[in-house]
Amino acid sequence: MKEESSAVSNLVFDFLSESASAKSKDDVLLLLGKISQYFGFSYFAISGIPSPPERIDPYFVLGNWSAGWFDRYRENNYVHADPIVQLSKTCDHAFVWSEALRDQKLARQSRRVMNEAREFRLIDGFSVPLHTAAGFQSIVSFGAERVELSTCDRSALYLMAAYAHSLLRAQIGNDASRKIQALPMITTREREIIHWCAAGKTATEIATILGRSHRTIQNVILNIQRKLNVVNTPQMIAESFRLRIIR
Image (tube, rainbow, N blue to C red; front, side, top):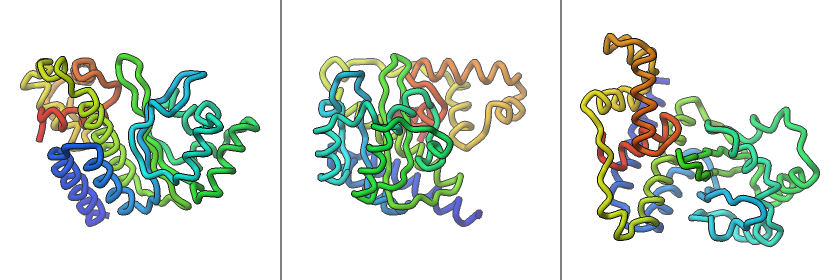
Protein backbone atom coordinates (compact mmCIF):
# COMPACT_ATOMS: atom_id res chain seq x y z
CA MET A 1 0.00 0.00 0.00
CA LYS A 2 2.83 2.39 0.89
CA GLU A 3 4.65 1.59 -2.37
CA GLU A 4 1.43 2.15 -4.33
CA SER A 5 0.88 5.51 -2.64
CA SER A 6 4.46 6.54 -3.37
CA ALA A 7 4.16 5.55 -7.04
CA VAL A 8 0.93 7.50 -7.46
CA SER A 9 2.41 10.52 -5.65
CA ASN A 10 5.36 10.48 -8.06
CA LEU A 11 2.95 10.22 -10.98
CA VAL A 12 1.02 13.27 -9.76
CA PHE A 13 4.24 15.23 -9.24
CA ASP A 14 5.47 14.38 -12.75
CA PHE A 15 2.08 15.28 -14.25
CA LEU A 16 1.99 18.67 -12.52
CA SER A 17 5.59 19.39 -13.49
CA GLU A 18 5.09 18.49 -17.16
CA SER A 19 1.72 20.23 -17.35
CA ALA A 20 3.26 23.45 -16.08
CA SER A 21 5.18 23.72 -19.36
CA ALA A 22 2.24 22.73 -21.59
CA LYS A 23 1.81 25.33 -24.33
CA SER A 24 -1.29 24.02 -26.09
CA LYS A 25 -4.33 21.79 -25.85
CA ASP A 26 -2.38 19.12 -27.73
CA ASP A 27 0.25 19.06 -24.97
CA VAL A 28 -2.45 18.57 -22.34
CA LEU A 29 -4.12 15.92 -24.51
CA LEU A 30 -0.87 13.95 -24.65
CA LEU A 31 -0.35 14.14 -20.89
CA LEU A 32 -3.92 13.10 -20.11
CA GLY A 33 -3.53 10.21 -22.52
CA LYS A 34 -0.58 8.91 -20.50
CA ILE A 35 -2.51 9.28 -17.25
CA SER A 36 -5.53 7.49 -18.70
CA GLN A 37 -3.45 4.53 -19.79
CA TYR A 38 -1.69 4.31 -16.43
CA PHE A 39 -5.02 3.87 -14.64
CA GLY A 40 -6.39 1.47 -17.24
CA PHE A 41 -8.67 3.81 -19.18
CA SER A 42 -9.08 3.75 -22.95
CA TYR A 43 -10.83 7.10 -23.32
CA PHE A 44 -11.13 10.49 -21.67
CA ALA A 45 -12.87 13.78 -22.35
CA ILE A 46 -13.18 17.28 -20.89
CA SER A 47 -16.26 19.34 -21.60
CA GLY A 48 -18.41 22.13 -20.28
CA ILE A 49 -22.01 21.21 -19.55
CA PRO A 50 -24.61 22.99 -21.71
CA SER A 51 -28.05 24.01 -20.51
CA PRO A 52 -31.10 22.64 -22.37
CA PRO A 53 -31.62 22.88 -25.29
CA GLU A 54 -28.01 23.83 -26.10
CA ARG A 55 -25.81 21.32 -27.86
CA ILE A 56 -22.50 20.03 -26.52
CA ASP A 57 -20.42 20.95 -29.59
CA PRO A 58 -19.21 24.42 -28.47
CA TYR A 59 -18.64 23.19 -24.92
CA PHE A 60 -16.44 20.21 -25.75
CA VAL A 61 -12.82 21.06 -24.93
CA LEU A 62 -10.76 17.98 -25.80
CA GLY A 63 -10.60 14.22 -25.54
CA ASN A 64 -9.93 10.96 -27.33
CA TRP A 65 -13.52 9.67 -27.13
CA SER A 66 -14.33 7.11 -29.81
CA ALA A 67 -15.13 9.07 -32.97
CA GLY A 68 -18.09 6.83 -33.75
CA TRP A 69 -19.56 7.27 -30.30
CA PHE A 70 -18.97 11.01 -30.15
CA ASP A 71 -20.59 11.49 -33.57
CA ARG A 72 -23.66 9.56 -32.44
CA TYR A 73 -23.68 11.43 -29.12
CA ARG A 74 -23.69 14.81 -30.87
CA GLU A 75 -26.16 13.85 -33.59
CA ASN A 76 -28.70 12.66 -31.03
CA ASN A 77 -27.92 15.45 -28.55
CA TYR A 78 -27.48 12.81 -25.85
CA VAL A 79 -25.88 15.24 -23.38
CA HIS A 80 -29.24 16.10 -21.81
CA ALA A 81 -30.16 12.43 -21.36
CA ASP A 82 -26.72 11.25 -20.26
CA PRO A 83 -27.12 10.12 -16.62
CA ILE A 84 -23.43 10.75 -15.92
CA VAL A 85 -23.71 14.37 -17.01
CA GLN A 86 -26.96 14.84 -15.11
CA LEU A 87 -25.46 13.40 -11.94
CA SER A 88 -22.41 15.65 -12.22
CA LYS A 89 -24.64 18.74 -12.15
CA THR A 90 -25.61 18.07 -8.55
CA CYS A 91 -22.48 16.29 -7.36
CA ASP A 92 -19.21 17.90 -6.29
CA HIS A 93 -17.18 14.74 -5.78
CA ALA A 94 -15.70 12.27 -8.27
CA PHE A 95 -17.49 8.99 -8.86
CA VAL A 96 -17.26 5.65 -10.64
CA TRP A 97 -20.19 5.26 -13.03
CA SER A 98 -21.21 1.76 -12.02
CA GLU A 99 -21.16 2.67 -8.33
CA ALA A 100 -23.08 5.92 -8.75
CA LEU A 101 -25.78 4.40 -10.96
CA ARG A 102 -26.11 1.10 -9.10
CA ASP A 103 -29.31 2.08 -7.25
CA GLN A 104 -30.56 4.59 -9.80
CA LYS A 105 -33.73 3.99 -11.76
CA LEU A 106 -32.85 5.44 -15.15
CA ALA A 107 -35.30 6.92 -17.61
CA ARG A 108 -35.66 5.10 -20.94
CA GLN A 109 -33.52 7.62 -22.85
CA SER A 110 -30.80 7.52 -20.19
CA ARG A 111 -30.69 3.72 -20.38
CA ARG A 112 -30.39 4.03 -24.14
CA VAL A 113 -27.37 6.32 -23.80
CA MET A 114 -25.57 3.92 -21.47
CA ASN A 115 -26.47 0.84 -23.52
CA GLU A 116 -25.27 2.38 -26.77
CA ALA A 117 -22.04 3.52 -25.10
CA ARG A 118 -21.31 -0.13 -24.35
CA GLU A 119 -21.16 -0.78 -28.10
CA PHE A 120 -18.01 1.37 -28.10
CA ARG A 121 -16.47 -0.34 -25.02
CA LEU A 122 -17.56 2.50 -22.75
CA ILE A 123 -18.94 0.18 -20.10
CA ASP A 124 -17.70 1.93 -16.98
CA GLY A 125 -15.82 5.07 -16.11
CA PHE A 126 -14.69 7.66 -13.61
CA SER A 127 -16.00 11.22 -13.74
CA VAL A 128 -14.91 14.40 -12.01
CA PRO A 129 -17.57 17.14 -11.84
CA LEU A 130 -16.05 20.63 -11.71
CA HIS A 131 -17.95 23.76 -10.76
CA THR A 132 -16.81 27.36 -10.44
CA ALA A 133 -18.10 29.78 -7.83
CA ALA A 134 -19.78 31.64 -10.70
CA GLY A 135 -21.86 28.57 -11.53
CA PHE A 136 -20.09 27.29 -14.66
CA GLN A 137 -20.21 23.49 -14.80
CA SER A 138 -17.76 21.11 -16.44
CA ILE A 139 -16.92 17.42 -16.34
CA VAL A 140 -13.77 15.37 -16.87
CA SER A 141 -14.53 11.73 -17.68
CA PHE A 142 -12.39 8.63 -18.15
CA GLY A 143 -13.93 5.56 -19.79
CA ALA A 144 -13.08 1.87 -20.03
CA GLU A 145 -14.56 -1.60 -20.08
CA ARG A 146 -13.75 -2.04 -16.40
CA VAL A 147 -12.68 0.32 -13.61
CA GLU A 148 -10.37 -0.69 -10.79
CA LEU A 149 -9.28 2.30 -8.71
CA SER A 150 -8.02 2.44 -5.15
CA THR A 151 -8.90 5.36 -2.88
CA CYS A 152 -5.42 6.73 -3.55
CA ASP A 153 -5.95 6.42 -7.32
CA ARG A 154 -9.25 8.28 -7.14
CA SER A 155 -7.80 11.17 -5.18
CA ALA A 156 -4.87 11.46 -7.59
CA LEU A 157 -7.10 11.36 -10.67
CA TYR A 158 -9.39 13.97 -9.14
CA LEU A 159 -6.48 16.34 -8.55
CA MET A 160 -4.95 15.82 -12.00
CA ALA A 161 -8.31 16.20 -13.74
CA ALA A 162 -9.03 19.42 -11.87
CA TYR A 163 -5.55 20.73 -12.68
CA ALA A 164 -5.85 19.88 -16.38
CA HIS A 165 -9.25 21.56 -16.54
CA SER A 166 -7.93 24.67 -14.81
CA LEU A 167 -4.95 24.79 -17.17
CA LEU A 168 -7.16 24.48 -20.24
CA ARG A 169 -9.50 27.20 -19.01
CA ALA A 170 -6.49 29.47 -18.61
CA GLN A 171 -5.24 28.64 -22.12
CA ILE A 172 -8.64 29.24 -23.68
CA GLY A 173 -9.12 32.49 -21.80
CA ASN A 174 -5.59 33.73 -22.26
CA ASP A 175 -6.57 36.99 -23.92
CA ALA A 176 -5.34 40.51 -23.20
CA SER A 177 -7.78 41.11 -20.38
CA ARG A 178 -6.67 37.95 -18.60
CA LYS A 179 -2.98 38.67 -19.01
CA ILE A 180 -3.27 41.87 -16.98
CA GLN A 181 -5.50 40.32 -14.34
CA ALA A 182 -3.80 40.34 -10.94
CA LEU A 183 -3.21 37.09 -9.12
CA PRO A 184 -5.34 36.59 -6.01
CA MET A 185 -3.76 37.85 -2.80
CA ILE A 186 -2.93 34.81 -0.68
CA THR A 187 -1.60 35.34 2.84
CA THR A 188 1.24 33.37 4.40
CA ARG A 189 -1.22 31.56 6.68
CA GLU A 190 -3.50 30.74 3.73
CA ARG A 191 -0.55 29.39 1.78
CA GLU A 192 0.42 27.22 4.73
CA ILE A 193 -3.09 25.80 4.96
CA ILE A 194 -3.12 25.06 1.22
CA HIS A 195 0.13 23.13 1.69
CA TRP A 196 -1.45 21.05 4.45
CA CYS A 197 -4.52 20.38 2.30
CA ALA A 198 -2.26 19.27 -0.55
CA ALA A 199 -0.57 16.90 1.89
CA GLY A 200 -3.93 15.24 2.45
CA LYS A 201 -4.78 16.76 5.82
CA THR A 202 -8.39 17.50 6.77
CA ALA A 203 -9.54 20.78 8.30
CA THR A 204 -9.73 19.05 11.68
CA GLU A 205 -6.16 17.76 11.39
CA ILE A 206 -4.87 21.16 10.25
CA ALA A 207 -6.61 22.81 13.20
CA THR A 208 -4.78 20.46 15.57
CA ILE A 209 -1.42 21.02 13.84
CA LEU A 210 -1.74 24.82 13.89
CA GLY A 211 -3.45 25.08 17.27
CA ARG A 212 -6.56 26.73 15.84
CA SER A 213 -10.24 25.85 15.97
CA HIS A 214 -11.79 23.71 13.25
CA ARG A 215 -14.18 26.56 12.45
CA THR A 216 -11.32 29.00 11.93
CA ILE A 217 -9.50 26.66 9.55
CA GLN A 218 -12.71 25.86 7.67
CA ASN A 219 -13.42 29.57 7.23
CA VAL A 220 -9.89 30.16 5.91
CA ILE A 221 -10.30 27.31 3.40
CA LEU A 222 -13.65 28.70 2.23
CA ASN A 223 -12.09 32.15 1.83
CA ILE A 224 -9.24 30.71 -0.27
CA GLN A 225 -11.76 28.90 -2.47
CA ARG A 226 -13.64 32.17 -2.97
CA LYS A 227 -10.43 33.95 -3.98
CA LEU A 228 -9.60 31.20 -6.48
CA ASN A 229 -13.17 30.93 -7.83
CA VAL A 230 -13.48 27.23 -6.97
CA VAL A 231 -15.93 25.31 -4.82
CA ASN A 232 -14.01 22.49 -3.14
CA THR A 233 -10.61 21.48 -1.79
CA PRO A 234 -9.31 19.38 -4.73
CA GLN A 235 -10.02 22.27 -7.12
CA MET A 236 -8.39 24.69 -4.67
CA ILE A 237 -5.23 22.57 -4.60
CA ALA A 238 -5.16 22.19 -8.39
CA GLU A 239 -5.63 25.93 -8.96
CA SER A 240 -2.94 26.70 -6.38
CA PHE A 241 -0.47 24.54 -8.27
CA ARG A 242 -1.41 26.18 -11.57
CA LEU A 243 -0.97 29.69 -10.18
CA ARG A 244 2.31 28.69 -8.47
CA ILE A 245 0.86 29.55 -5.07
CA ILE A 246 2.35 26.23 -4.01
CA ARG A 247 4.93 24.13 -5.84
